[in-house]
Image 1 (cartoon, rainbow, N blue to C red):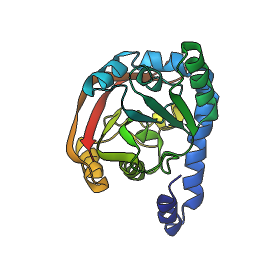
Image 2 (tube, rainbow, N blue to C red):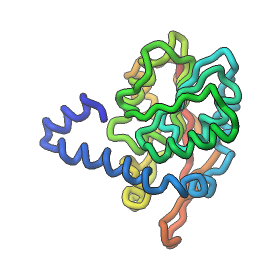
Image 3 (cartoon, rainbow, N blue to C red):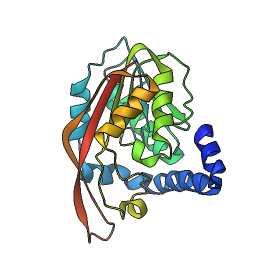
Length: 231
């Protein structure tokens, strides 16, 4: 978790809640890892990945990073296009599944790193494009994560973020371990600016996230936003 955010939570007397929230999200993904690919396919299938890859050109000369890579939804496809891919996630069980998939596909340019999105285990100015798909609503401090993505990018490097648009489905906090109920477009623009990005664009990705309760009693569609910018 972010040291700065933890200090701020401590100042408010909420350090325990901060750590608990981070740990609960990590434990949630460790538990759902075996079923996650099936769960995600019901949410948005391959459609969102196709939209992301169509938004930015990736070639074999580039080093790219996928933050919150999970079971490799985006990273595996990126490895077929980029020269080197670094896939970061804090869930060992999610990365285990991603590694197995990479081995089956014979992808040798894909490096898996277990670590925190708020303190990335990647050197500064080492990445051409950084991606984060449906990650920010699972972290305590989205701005710190965006700042870290800025740090690892080379000059003129590009950030590509996809996440839920702001909504009011509070039950997703319990069902999916969501810490944020999506984000407003202006909110993302402001965070990108604060982190130092330029040429910022936040738009409707043209794809919805279809999700619901585990018992099937509630099903909703939530718009997905696509945000880009350059260092």
